Length: 404
Image 1 (cartoon, rainbow, N blue to C red):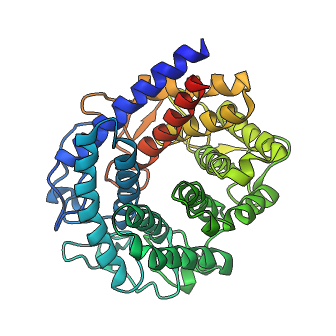
Image 2 (image 1 turned 180 degrees about the horizontal axis):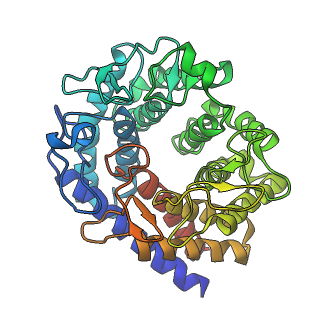
Image 3 (image 1 turned 90 degrees about the vertical axis):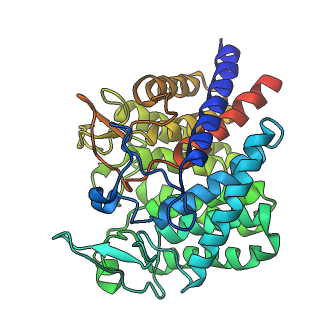
């Protein structure tokens, strides 16, 4: 039965990714050529200027960095399977690479949100749009996603640029270690925000996602930070009773999607995948996060570690493809039937509850009552990152198992 599921899943994931990418490439670009996924996932209406910060006058650096990594990675995957799609991805990837490279070269950073003039801005609580402060020595999630995207694209399109982008990634990693990484990019960048933020494992989790990518690109010597990041999170955030990851040491809150994503990124890093004890721990993080986190449609955004109570009514789409990726990687290491069952559970929930099919996108957020207009992070839909790259890893696992 597992062979049938694996073959069917690999084919379905490939169709879903190809469909999403073709849809994204068919849309008119933002500004000078940035990716445009500004669509309301409920109404299927394009956002307009009337939608304010959701509209086409605002470009999110976070999304463009994610999209560049997804485009370059999928272009390589589809090169022999769908050469026409690969060529179109490469055309878009080259354009986006040049734009993001230029954006980052302005002051060494990429910012969360830009206005129509491509100036970094933020929104005050009263709704006023004001300039964002220069980042200086502070780095952010947008820097992390941009660095990953620039590396993936440079490797494919302009390898002579790799040293600069690898150095950029190194500066982001150093900022995490030195306490100069600001998580809330919608606040003013500066010492006040750094001093106020909690010790969440999110930054290390996101940067850990670069490790497997670097290995696949033949740049494993630049991924040695990953082992330290994994150990840091396990030692400080793992609850030994539930095998859930605390957002913050000593805190009761658990973002189960982030816990699953961390486990997947760690399992994608070969030294971790060869450590049997660590693999067992990461697999238990996945299974506990799924067991505790599943609500009516998908995985609850936040739960209580002490009681298991769902602390949020929101069930975002992204945690399910992340669960598919992590379960696929864990199962490939252990063959545990419970992990294969978790893979199938996440698969069924995502494609039955969230996946629209036509167009090939997902509802961003569901509750017990159904889809809701709640934006998890940015109003732009996923540019092949959470969904596409997660399903791509699962395809590799499924096809590898079929060939074994």
